[in-house]
Amino acid sequence: SGFTLFAIDADTGAGIWDTPMDYAGESSPTVDDGIVYVASKENHLYAFDAESGEQIWVYKTDGLLFGTPSLTDDAVIIGGDDGDLFSIDRKNGHLLWKIELDSAIYSTSAISDNRIFVTTAGQTISSVDLESGDLVWSYPIGGSASPAVADGVVYVSSEDGALYAIDAST
Image (cartoon, rainbow, N blue to C red; front, top):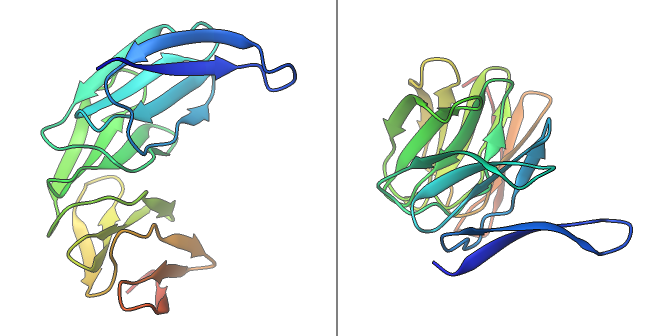
């Protein structure tokens, strides 16, 4: 511990608030609807009030969290270095579901058409059903790069140096 999350006025650069948190690591905050979501390498996913900096909830995982939280209308999606992918309720920080994938997740998930797309250090990209947390498909490419989705195509760079375009439905 000993790390701080700061809110800074974009126009003036003046500090608005700051709040202590466990080691922030490489996660960037995600902000939506007045709430700041941020993960820490010390197994915590936080939700803070964007105006006051007050902690709304915290969810503790077993693995370290490296990626940036991805948001849906109802959930925060984040993966851990233990291979677990989590769906956490945005309102209260309670676990909606969890699925164990083949290896560590260092990337940020992409979300489209009720599917989550995530890469793992085991060089796999997986599609997970947003509502149930069930594995839809898995393909043997990936790494630590975060995927992107557009027009039904998942784009991901891989450890082999190539950029892949995969049909999101299959």
